[in-house]
Amino acid sequence: MPIPDFQTLMLPVLRVAATGEVRISDAVEKLADEFQLSPEDRSHLLPSGRQTTFSNRVHWAKSYLGKAGLIELTRRAHFRITDEGRTVLASKPDRIDIRFLDQFPGFQEFRNAAGQKDGEAEPTAPLGMSATASLTPDEVMRNAHRQLDAALADELMQRIRSGTPAFFESLVVRLLVTMGYGGSVTDVSKALVGGPGDGGIDGVIDQDALGLDRIYVQAKRYADGNTVSASAIRDFFGSLDRFKASKGLFVTASAFTTSARETAAQLSKRIVLIDGDQLTRLMIRHGVGCRVEEVLEIKKVDEEFFE
Image (cartoon, rainbow, N blue to C red; front, top):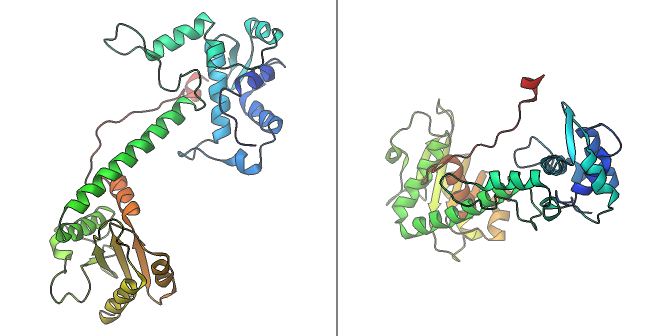
């Protein structure tokens, strides 16, 4: 079965707490068994790579139950049910979720405090606190971040396609320099060789700081829908051969056909293909053509501080 969302886990977490003081890691394992999660689901990690998705959702379920006063923390990484929690279990609810928890004053205060912004007269529902939400607040933030990146990538591509072929070639070389290639190159124009008689090569850049090897670049902007074919890859291979180059990078703002990718994989020289989607992802990751507008930090309790 799929990994249950954190609201689905609230009632099971409360039941585990009713057995006595429990360690959170033990609760995670017990609930993973209860939901018959596969090894893949148990080990599925958050994008940060620091915690499994299931463990993260169990922690959030525990946290929300604590805000409602149904469980309490006893010592580091341990918790147990409260009298209020036992009363809830005795009523045999079919499900505990945000809507259910909203009947408790402590949880109402938490929602109001989390939703209140500076200068607002009335509190608003905080991120991830919808009664029907299935994602934890940090999952909501990551999803929103992915949506923002997707919108940014689309805008970057529109700007790229509205530019000149020369600008695109310069962009590709600038990205490579930002990624750490180029050695001591600081003037991007020195790595550009495109023009009449360029032999099918738009840029040449050192792979390492010492210039022990070079990367030969071909940058073809191409309009959306005008894909790069296998013949273009073979032509690039011929250009590499003429320069006695062992590796090359072919970048396009559009996409490669399946046969183009197969051809690149079969040729004797190493040819890396970067399509429009990969290009904008790299630009965002390395801050080329975009900049950081705002930084939001997600912090958690430092357990060692309280030992």
